[in-house]
Image (cartoon, rainbow, N blue to C red; front, side):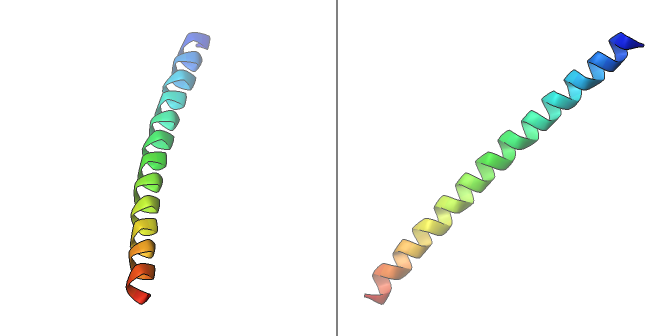
Length: 46
């Protein structure tokens, strides 16, 4: 039973790490896209 508990904890940690990595990538990607759009708009307004 203890071994099963350890396996489940490891699997959950791996899953959470994967989700966090994907979330970080998407946040960075869309943040940079929004920043570039903002810079382009600023240039158009000038």
